[in-house]
Image 1 (cartoon, one colour):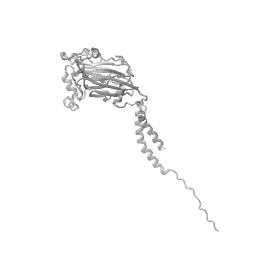
Image 2 (tube, rainbow, N blue to C red):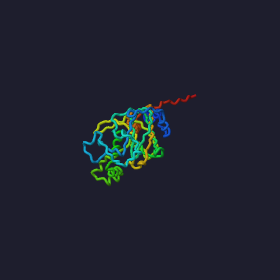
Image 3 (cartoon, rainbow, N blue to C red):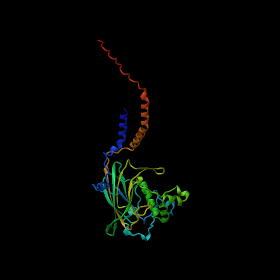
Image 4 (cartoon, rainbow, N blue to C red):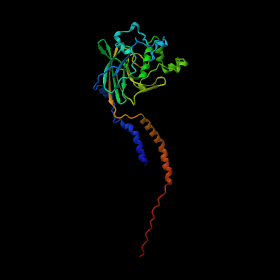
Length: 338
């Protein structure tokens, strides 16, 4: 009886591990790159994916503003040209529609096919592709970075991030602040380490930090690199809940960063155009375990740890109370007397 229970508990614990056999494997980096080179589908811009950019000469952050100058998305209604006459048009390939308009609240189509495109990112700028990842597909994203000087390609490095909508909005705010008229203040503010922040920031502001931004799951951060392969498998559609904005559906932004942001170890501006070849591959998942299976597995595991000593002790204490079986009495055969 005890052995059957042990086999049952062990099978429950092994189900999540064995389910990976039936799911498509991510494989190595080279295999993932091959997957990104599969059959491509045509891109319908603003329906399949959409293109966005942050450029230094189109800044929405101005410390001297009035409340009526701000729109519903929290950014100034009029951009501030903070670049002056120092902007080199030859290093800014972005078109105005990429940075003049805020990204649409209407989501793009769920991505269930393979696509590829080339994104040109100007010097001291950031480029982004807005996509709607599917929770029923495993998505592999490949990014190859090169530099363009004149009519030739040269080696170059940049930063690649994967963000949700709310994370990208904070990233936009950080870019605008650090390219605004009060650049020195915000650069020093955002570049502080934890120890420097506690030491240099006044106590009344130490617990209120609005400058930070992070990437999806805090892991999809690839900095100072020329090649990136990342794989994403969603448990469910990404939903963000906030006390002020309620529940909102989150899309994803593949960001190619070509400016010196507030993170340490990132690639700075390189005085060249960055060409990022982005390929996205999707593979349908055969088995998608619901989120609650993780809770059940851990519950069963810890319950088994707690119950095992109890069951063993109970059997040990009851062992002496079992009725003994009397041995069958056998009469000694009598000796035949002659």
